[in-house]
Amino acid sequence: MKIFHLIFLLIILSSCQNDSKKLVGNTVSENRNVVESKKPELDLIKTKKKAEEALAFCKSKKMNTDLCILIDMSMHSGLNRFIIWDFKEQKISNKYLVGHGCGNNTWSSDESKDNPEFSNEDGSHLSALGKYQLGERGKSDWGIHVKYLMHGLEETNNNALKRFIVFHSWGLMSDVEVYPKGSPEGWGCPTISNNAMKELDPIIQNSKKPLLMWIYNE
Image (cartoon, rainbow, N blue to C red):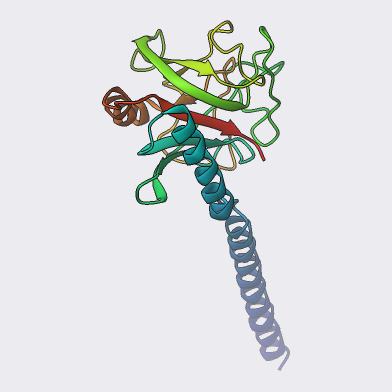
């Protein structure tokens, strides 16, 4: 009889352990789903409003009214916050990752992935907010060796040429979102992946009018 009780007790303990493992497994899975569900997303209403403002600006400055580049720096740098906006279709035609300036942080790190600072000051190693006109195409030492000059059109970014802030690709940039990690940070240039630049380069080259790039964080 004692042996029977012992066996029965072992069966109950084993069952409890299995139930406990299932509970832990379910909890981990549920927690993972909660984290994934909290992944930030692009605010489409905000983006459409920016696009409307951008179109009015492009018309007033006789710039390209087919498309523009919108960069929402309020988003985490591990998310696709570099937007190609199609004015004709009134929608996003493509999205990419884009890096920002590291400031006093370590070059190529992602230390300010969710709270970047901005500056128009030379030597700050920070990106500058505002509207830019993409200018001359030239040779870059980075990425696919293509760069575009950035003419700052506002007081917040009018030192871009002086600071050698240009639009180029960087081999360290990913083709896909890396959130919760961030994109590598450089010295202030908006940087995209090599494959992204290969897609955009002919589009920019074929633009009959100057292209607008608008970097904002609100």
